Each structure stands twice: as C-alpha cells, then as structure tokens.
Length: 341
Ligand SMILES: Nc1nc2c(ncn2[C@@H]2O[C@H](COP(=O)(O)OP(=O)(O)OP(=O)(O)O)[C@@H](O)[C@H]2O)c(=O)[nH]1
Ligand SMILES: [Mg+2]
Image (cartoon, rainbow, N blue to C red; front, top):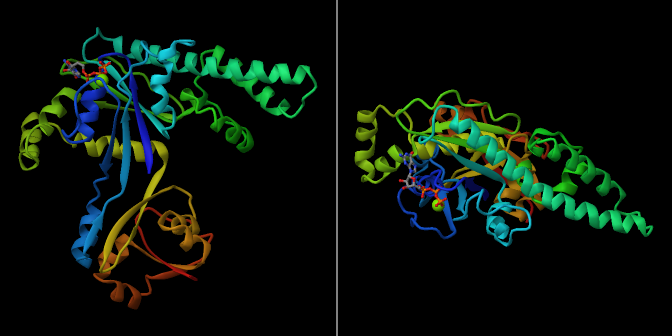
C-alpha cells in the first residue's frame, strides 16, 4: 500500500486535513496517527453491481499525521528531528500550507519556508554520510567513491536551495539515494489551505510537486455531517468536489498511479500500480505466486466490458485479449492472470 506523510508548519491544518481524509474518524490531538483510506472509485461500484460478488474491495492509500510540525521539529541536530521518522518512510509528502490566516503572499512565503526546512533536514543527513565516506576514502577504502561523488553533488544542489525532487538522477544513483529517504526528494502534494478570502497568487511548486487548493475547515464541517447529508451541504456551499476524492485524485496524479481490477463471483477488487507497469507486475501485486508462475493475462478494458454488458459478450466481440508478461497495464484494465501453480 502506498503511504503519504502529512507535513507542514505548526497550525497549518494538518490534523484537520487528516480528519477529512478519514471522514471524521481521526482522533484530534497531538500524537502520531496512521489512517487507511478507501480509494473511492465509481468503476468498482459498477463492476460490483455487474458481478454481485460476495466481497467488494477498494484500493487503499495510507496517510500519516506525525503529530509534529516542521519548524519545530526538523532543525539539524535537534533530537526531536526523529519525530518526522514516520513520514520519512512514506512514498510521498502532503504539505499543508496556511493560506487562510496570512496577508496575500503569506502562503507563498510559508511554502518557501517549508522547502527550506526540508532542504535543511536533508542537508544534515547528506553531510553526515558524506563526511563518513570522506574519512573512509582518506584511509584508502575506495568502495564509497561513487556514493561520495553523488553526495557532494546533492550537497551542492541543496546548499543552492534546490529540493532534490527537481533533479534527475541516473537509475543507479536514485537507488543509492533511496535508502536515505530524503524528504526534499519525495514527490510532494501541496495543499493550499484556504479560507474564504482570496489568498493572492499561489506559486507553482515546480517539478515533482503538485498544488491543490482546499478549504480545509469548510470541508471538515461537511464531513462532520452524516454521509447522506454531505452532498446537499456541499451544493449549498458551492463546493464542487468532495475533498477526500480531490486529494486522492491528486495523489494518484502525483505518484503516477493507475488502477486495475480483478472480478469474479467471490470478489471484485481494485489494485494500484505505477503507470508503465507490466502484466507480471500486476500479477505480483495480487500474489507473488501469480508473478512466478505467470503464463498469460486475460485483459478487457473497463469501458469495453461495460459497453458489452458481460464478460461473455465482451469475449464474443473479441474485446478480451491474451497478453504476455511485457504488456503495459492500462488504467481500468480488468485482468485475470493465468498461471502455473
Ligand atoms: N480559520 C481557519 N482556521 C483553521 C483552518 N484550518 C485549521 N484551522 C484551525 O487551526 C487550528 C489548528 O488546526 P490543526 O488541523 O490542528 O493544525 P495542525 O497543523 O495539525 O497543528 P499542529 O499539529 O498543532 O501543528 C485549529 O484550531 C483549526 O480550527 C482554516 O482553514 N481556517
Ligand atoms: Mg496536528
């Protein structure tokens, strides 16, 4: 399951956003919270209506509220820096920026402060490791040469104020850096937490990041209502999209995620993959045995299946294809893996 860590300055609205994501089920407070969110997908609902399975399973995304903030917890050398440890292991960051309380331009400044914090945090880690490697190189241990050169390069970029997500690294270098879990290298969704007032121009957060505006407090009021009353209240407020659906859609876009489906009388289920993944990756997502014994994938697109009305009809219309290991899975593919036990 992919996980997203929520970061931001103190009182920017992180915990309120976490409560929205959990649809009111979170516990307000200052502690660390981990929540698993069901990815809403009307395609799953329609597949479930078609197959009437015993069980319907939506894709899931995990969100983490570390209960700590940047600014107060990430100064290099500060023991409290560990409080961001839970976020470090996440695939992506969700940064909440206060765009409700400050003067116009305040949000842009806060975002730039957040970037500086992430960069400072990474600098401490990179410096530490670089110095250790330099010592080893001095005594003639050369294995760390490439890593050292890479860290010198990262250090320069960070010192110049560049988040590492803006850089492109060779595959081997990216692999080497992965273990450090550098915060400024992670893809980042910036949530501009707005009020009713115009927050002024909001900056483009640049390569590797996406920005989205959300009235966090308003949305929190909406999800405090019973589910059946939310739509009407949203309409009254003139809010077009459900906040949870919006954030999840943006996380998928940021991480380049797609969904594929497995269907049958027992279960209709949505699965998550990175765009560009192969049929054998899809098999591995379901079970390692399916990847190991992979023979073929039987694939029909969701749209073709719906247009045909049933799997049998889709087959008659020659819309069900047999694909090999290398097939690039498309968003919305309905897949059955044929495999050797
Ligand atoms: N006016 C206004 N207040 C907000 C908004 N979002 C959050 N707040 C208020 O700001 C305070 C902090 O919100 P939280 O969601 O707890 O913020 P946080 O970032 O988790 O705070 P810490 O974890 O303490 O750093 C609460 O009193 C919220 O009601 C907003 O969009 N507008
Ligand atoms: Mg909080």
